[in-house]
Length: 210
Ligand code: A4P
Ligand code: MG
Image (cartoon, rainbow, N blue to C red; front, side, top):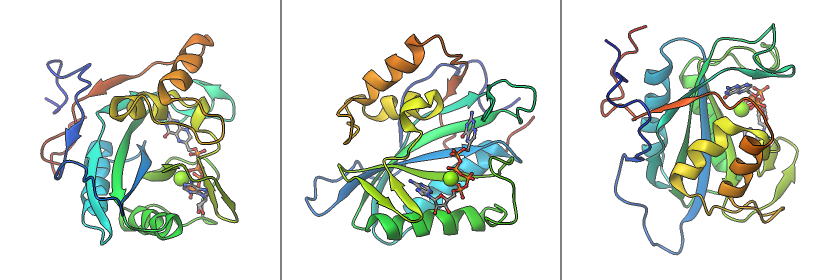
């Protein structure tokens, strides 16, 4: 039986994987979206969280539940070319890292977990792990190779749902809308929002069974 048996389906309890986020004024709050639709998805997400926690300059990591969601591609949800379903989550980080340094660490972790380097894969190809920096405090960044908030944040149920589990009041610094308001807009627009949550495995080495 897989670790997310029926008993935990629908759980929305965030899992604190380290100390509670610190009040240290020198720490920024960042949100990282995690996705996987290839391989042992739950294990890969768990290992990404472990690596984030072990990163110098990251003080605490809190991870949302996992959500299984149909792949979204250029054709929308469930189009004919849609890839295998994703497991998605969002992690809250308290960090002293600058946004660029955090992005570089995310790309490094993707590589450690087997993601084919950029340039050797198709856009929106299946992926063992995708780590996107979706929010970094109230910063707005538009530089080559780094856009924050993530440009597709407001459209994505699979990011907004777990973000709301962590902080429904998290604000988009450009539009001023809260995570809860963005989620409501996505759900209210008649978009398919299929997906359901699982408690995060307590032991990230637990393997997916199917
Ligand atoms: N980059 C710029 N800004 C950022 C940022 N805020 N966070 C640059 C992360 N990266 C950022 O990203 C390409 C480059 O974007 C990076 O080298 C970085 O310099 P990537 O992840 O390497 O490549 P990608 O997959 O082509 O782009 P991206 O943006 O991750 O794809 P998407 O738009 O996130 O789409 N359906 C479901 N259900 N769940 C999913 O998680 N994910 C995708 C990926 C499609 N469909 C999905 C899901
Ligand atoms: Mg990415």
